[in-house]
Length: 603
Image (cartoon, rainbow, N blue to C red):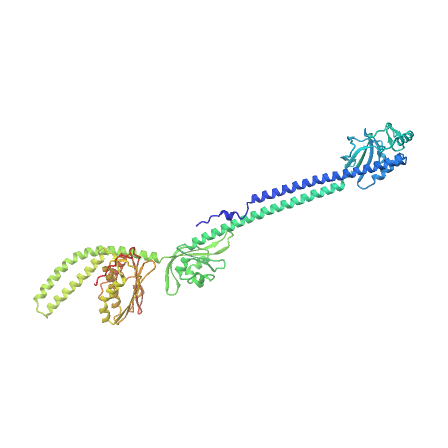
């Protein structure tokens, strides 16, 4: 029976597409989290640098205000303060420009008087933007309005105004000159913008490191997903292949085990690897005994003559032979054998198929016997009809002439002999007619032990006269009552009893054993300790007119065979010269086993 794969078994391993989807979802989650982390770090960096720039600008503005208003600094002092402040780590530049983008102060003095390409819209609070330096590096720029004089009193502004009259502005400036610092002629609190540029290299390196880590983790996850997919895919296919192999093996094993022919297989080492039940039955050798052994140690010599052909690479097809697998037992078999070669041309072993021809030959023999008996019956019926009428005339004439001679004369004795021979010939013709006539059986449920008891009483006196002991063993199930024609079957048993008695002229023992099988079949065993039958003659004893007795007609066992076959049974014989003979009758199970019992006739 083919095995179907259950949903439970299929559900043990997820589909590879589920694994791929899980890996893709995990990868998307990781990338999304990485992007969010990068954006968060960017915002964090912007906040830090913006706060740092605001603090720096406020500190510088406070220092400039203090110096200019309290210490009456000039432009040189403010410039030096700007330069010193710009020397702090991560500060790229620090400068002050007007609304038109003219650089008023710069930590790099060479940039004073230059213009900014894009002037941003300043606010009173710190704002930031990203700018590109001449060396293509990016800087984080924080800016807002710059007014170092904010918060001073009137006296201070007046003093600065007095001092501002002597200042000289750079070329193109509109304010008064202080040497290095240029103020507008009309000062206001929103006239100047201060810029603080910070180096973004550490943050860029940290962000690149995060990107590298993200790419590495994503790659690892992708590899893990791919590896998981491949492993699941391989495991799924391995389990599927293993399951298919197990199913195929179980199917092949069941088919091979149930074959009605014997199958023997050897492994690459030439030892027996497989022996099915049919092979055990044919050879009489159990698989446990044959397994692992060499074929020449288990099978008949040279594999019944097949080993040489197989060694030469030849195939053996339906080769009929007689093989003796066990002592004292010869089995007619049909043998087919061949070598097993794999796809690479390597010898894997041999396979031998044995087919028991015993039943086939028995059927052939039964068919030949049936055909022969049918022809003989038709001939016997015609001959008996033509002979019986003249025999009646011969017997009448012999009786007539016998009565003409005196009692005790030779002529009267000759007439008596003639009459006796005519009676014997008529008896033979009657037996021949009984043999040729179709068997019309009257079947009724029969008590087998009672039938045997009556039949044995009929030959008890003959057995006692020849010093023959009769024993009986009854193993019949009381509920087993086969449908038999009691008269005809009693005739069958009587013929077998008489044959056994005649086979023991010096006395002996006759044993009758009856038993019932589990399926309802009935078995009769009738054995004697007589002279026995030679093996070469055992196949002929059921033929009509074949006899080994000087006064036998040769129809007794033929009639027995016919009666047994008419009941659907079978009779076999086993005999050894000097050891006795055993007849075995087997009758099939009866349909009616519990009907009223018919009492067999007394004779």
